[in-house]
Image (tube, rainbow, N blue to C red):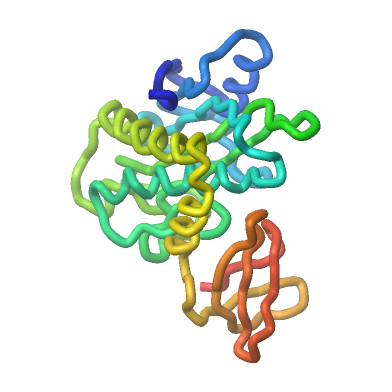
Length: 246
C-alpha cells in the first residue's frame, strides 16, 4: 500500500495542504502519507475559495505523492485518478456519482467533495504533489453560501465511522494511484470522461462572450474542457473560463 502507508492526525489545523507542504519542506516524508484533521480553520478550495466543514463530521485529508512517472504536461492525469478514487469510495454507498470538471465530485446536482491539487515542478519533473480532499460524510447542516452542498449522511440517512471511511478511501485512492504507476493512462482518461457531470447533455453555460446552450463531449489530454454547440462548433476551456448554469 502506498496511499495510507503513514498517517498523521491532528485535532485541528489551518489547512491540511499547508501542513503537508511544511512537512515536505522540513522533513523526509514517505510517499502516500496522509495528513488528516477533524477541523480546518482556513480550509482552502480552488482559486482561494474556502471549504466549509463542521468539526468532527467529515474527511479532511491531504496526501503526499511523488509522481515521477507523470510528465508535468500530463499532470491532469493525477487529478483524474484522485477524482476516480473518490468516486470508487462513494460507489460503495450510493449510485450516480459524477465529476464536475475539473474535479468536484457530484451526486445529482449537489457537491459532496472537492479536491485541491498542488504540484511542485522542477524542469521536466514533478518533484511532489499534495492532493487535498474535503469529503462531506456526516454533516447535516451547511451554513456557508455554497450553493449546493450534500453529505453521505444526508443522502443515506446514516451516520458513518470516519476512521473506517478513511481506510476505505485510502484503499480506493491507492488502487487508482497504482494505475498511474502502471501507466494505464488511457484507462484513467476514458473512465474520467465517462463520469463527467453533464456529459453529452444539452445544458446552459456561460463564458466571457455569452450564455449559450452546449454539451460536454470530452476533455483534452491536458485537461481542457470541450463543449459542443448546436451548430457543431467546439469550444475549449481552461479552469475558470466557463461557468455551469443551473
